[in-house]
Image (cartoon, rainbow, N blue to C red; front, side, top):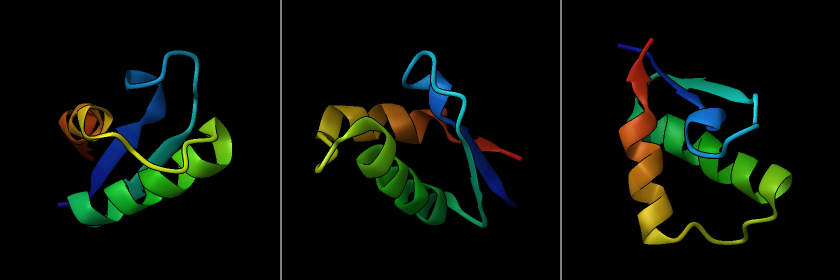
Length: 58
């Protein structure tokens, strides 16, 4: 089942939405978005956990 992540669920005020075929694809897109939009060169483990928890079924 496809997955979706609304960045605003993790970073208040961000309206970016990413979709993927599975959690791994959404996490990869999320990491790329975090680098470009939020200036995060690395994703700290606590943030990665929040992101993973925010991924929902589409």
